[in-house]
Image (tube, rainbow over all chains, first blue to last red; front, top):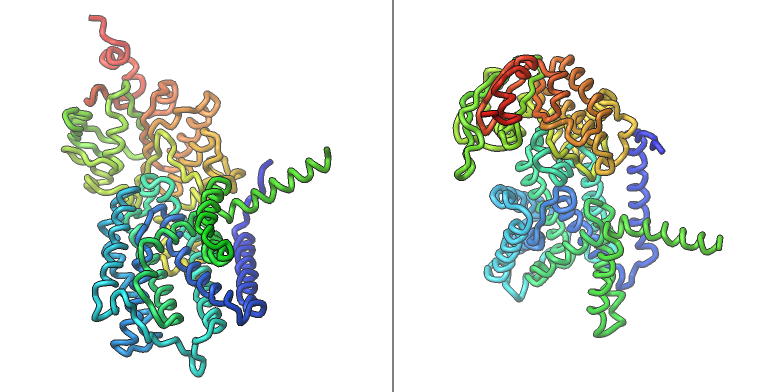
Length: 330
Length: 251
């Protein structure tokens, strides 16, 4: 059963068409849902997709955990927010500037803490997230503290002001699709292979000339930059931010999205983000039981779809088809 | 080619290596043998930058490489394989070898993610080069399989292909025949000779005496952390000290 050797060019073409198809579906979606409350939720799916991809690059590809990613997300949001309100900066300038600051910060923090492994890295990043959360709360003269920061300007392109759910949907999803394409390219490149190699056997990767330490720090910084951009976009679409959106709970939620969606899969991160963002809305009808159902579903999914949704759904589908065809034969 | 000079390694209170010196000539296949616990793997770990020795130096092609990390040594054309093959199990066979081409390519994070023209042409070059080494080791038909699903013998060949992709002038193999059946060991002996014929210096730690005596030009014997003997296979076979170390002394 020798499999045909994968032609590099053909698999590249397949990946390209998959992405184009996905983009078309995403961009068509508002035609069906426009106007409703769902539109607002889908904006959040876009933001969470970016965040889940950012964390997945670190966790799923490089194999390094972070329990503090909500902090980078918040830092992007607050830097953008403060620079455009107090300092009156143009949002289009504030966003990349915020991302640059967050990227440099993450790089410098990453140098020492990414020497840690496993549980110790989890603890260090957890601490990092908590520190950033405290900073958002306590630097009241800048951030407004627990009562939040309001009056953040919406983004504008010429005469178009991004102030409605539908417009925001296109804005956020353009960014999310760009992040997706960027990450897909990265994953299938020498850098992506280096990351996966470090994940599987750091020592072997080093022996082959991969500078594992630098690569881990680079991807940590990149992951923080993407999170920061998502945070800036969040701030400018919501025009109001408060620290509760960027706490430890949200770091864990991001982690859950990545694991449920599928570690090391970019499309998996979208599935995880979509499911975890939509699920609370779907379960809203279940009143007080929603949180129990939510938790139970997560447990069941981890038990029965261990590779995440992106690998689990096809496997499950094949199983069901097999059972059906066996039933037909009997 | 490679010079090990007065290397000593102490772990806690245990002296794993004591004042070991030898040199390896270019183009040779050199075997490092010795009973269990002689310090062979420790020696390899020191040469390849995984451990930092307590004392002594390692010189590669006239350059002091003492204390350099493994990724720097790969760029100086030194590479190694592991006793328990260290494959990237979740990646395909071809991708494993492509990682071996890492030092032969330069595209950075942004160039890769933005698919710059030069990174695309580099990617093609990497794929082609990797395929060449799969053909060299005779496992090209497995290119698309997941490395983790390979039987042990094929995994060993993959690890060697991946190491060769680095473009080494010297390759160190830690027990390459461990876990192989006799048929696979014969193939391995052939492959190691072919590697030498490419002009690559080979150093191997090995327990399979038949293999060592068959392919090695020179042999270094370690015992209890010290160099016991050094010479051609014939000299080693006739050495009384070596026989005593392996079989025990009569007295």
